Length: 214
Length: 162
Image (cartoon, rainbow over all chains, first blue to last red):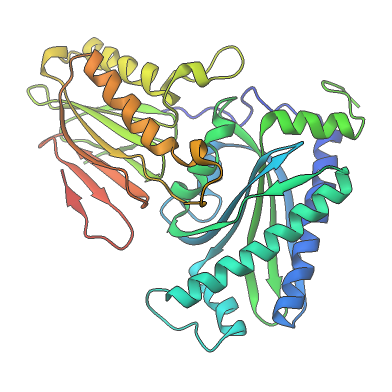
């Protein structure tokens, strides 16, 4: 079965300057989240890699090591002047690393209720920091839902998170930030998936012409 | 034995002894149609319930239950399947997160997908032999064209055949 090139209709043919703007915003949000992680763990948190890419849905579900890769995810929907989904996604071993830094837990086997609520709280704080940076930068009021947690297949979690974007096309602008903790290694990925109309709104606010070649 | 992998909002058809699979269904629904006599199986990975939800001009018909399922049926008939022999199975349509109160319509997209798939199949007079839908877990499914069995795998659960 042929797969479409990652340049469907909506939000994907974004001019380079617009993508650079999103990169700047994404970096700002993720750096603020990394700062929160530092405070939380008492170690230096860093933004290792920050990317903004238009990706086909099937590339997105492969992003974290395959659609069936088991991941811990904290999900929040944000609404207001702009809307979208925000996720904090970690491979299981990275989640265990964070749990171990914050408590005496972090062993093998299934996550305990305590461990899961700890991860939910960490996700809550990181997503909150990211959204705050975003809303400060854009001077917009954004409201985030109370984040929810799931431990499941990456494909199942990401494809659900793309359903709203799916109404407009088969690609999404994925703003991702990979976090790490000094001496601990990888500490999860933040994903911002703005709704397509919100991308246009961001460009408008920042004075970037809608279909500009700037 | 060849296995055809179907991605999000994609469809495919295989013949025995091939199998057809899709990975990591969350709120999406994997719909399979099977013609036992021909040993032909089709699958589509439905993401949204109705084409009326599409924004903008043309859209990917394999994404929406109400266009994807009739298209898959037509494709199989054009390849020699008999519409009257087709039997359907469904898996997926989970609610991956629960967010106390807010964002309900978004979170219930899985349920709406399942209902739209049932409706589309009913309109085509295609019986649903089995379902593994709803709940809160992601699923991977694989249809075996030699038997018509659909394997369903979920994290933390025994794999099962429906």
